[in-house]
Length: 319
Image (cartoon, rainbow, N blue to C red; front, top):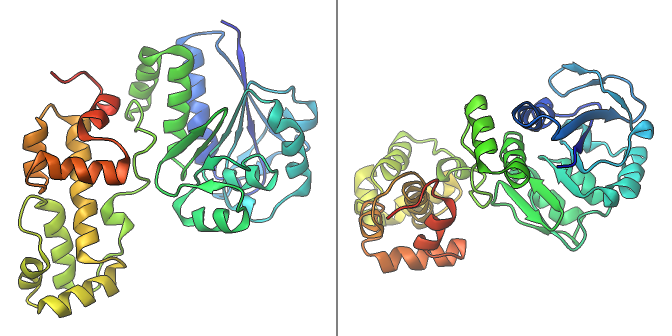
């Protein structure tokens, strides 16, 4: 197997975890299978850079002295808010030469500025997806998944999702056993599925300010199989259904029904990924009532039936 060079770009204001997370994955793979990866870091002029957290990182070399790598990784961070035309020009010239082009977090914005995401599906940190779509209409921005792979270009969401993407790339290169060994060493999941949502239903919605509404949010999360109709939830909050629905949407940013749908889908996905429970049991405990109702929700939202979702993402076969 030929050694693959992995080049990580550095610049002032880079998010340190965007760099060190994937770096630890590839370094772990090199320890597991020596001779697999040659890992390099480079800044424009080879000078040390200061990360967004104040950490100073000394690169191995300057970009001018770097050979075209197999895998070119572009991290994100506060430094992406001020485009550097020199870095954009370098990416525009050298990015297409990499066999794999990878971004973490707002590193996708740098790729887009260089025209490297035009016509491709991509993602970035959820807080910057709208900006990426607005500033670069030629990019098909998907705000939901933790990473997206479109041909040889891969983009990931915020910060720690770079670890998930790096593990996926190592699994592609070296196989599942190697990726699992690295994941165990780093004490993380083997890898979260790429189409897993960037954040849970609880984080997607704002936390209600009023205590009765906060308690209802918590109740929904802990009891997805219960009666979660507006009427039942309003009674729990001691409000009229109309007042409850209006107040819930005002304080959380989504309707009670949409919040319940997200919680139930998330609960069912977790059970499909982590347990051997049957589809019928999962549909009941997640509040769908019937397997058919759960199937419709999965196909509508994820484009796959529960059985297909489990086949893709359960760590071991379920019989």
